[in-house]
Length: 219
Image 1: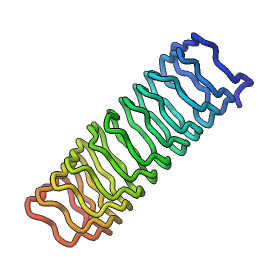
Image 2: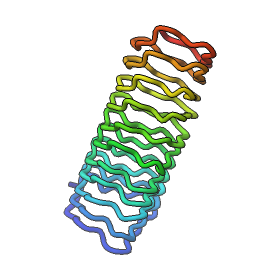
Image 3: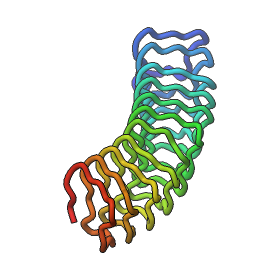
Image 4: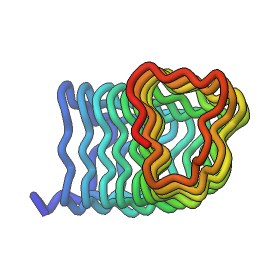
């Protein structure tokens, strides 16, 4: 570890960023205030305070935290890759990207708000709620079999290597759509893709009427 400090005092406030990576600190004060980012990579932190706000990035890479608290607000990116996270708290708000790749998260609460991209690569996710996403959605390598019926994405969608077999009828993707190495056999009529459409290695045999692709198609 960087030091022998195991606990932070009450009323602790940092105007900039706080780096607690690889430290022996196990607990954060309830009233902790951080003005920038908070890095807890490979630390011994077990939980976060309720209604905690981090204006910058929050990095929990490789931690044993299993549950996020209620009302967590991250102004930047939230990195939970390879962590012990299993449950996301209610009211989670991430203004940047949310990365849950390689985690044991099986479901996402419907009230989660993500301003950037949502990465769920090789996670345990089995069910996805209707989410209001500003960025892209990466479900590659997940056991997910279904997408929400009214899924509309303003950016890209990556379904490579998923268990998904059917696309929603009203699917709209503002960016690119990648269906390589999927079991999807049919593309819905009037599918709208703003960017490229990747179909190589998929089971799609026929392109439907009304298909709109803004970029190129790779078959």
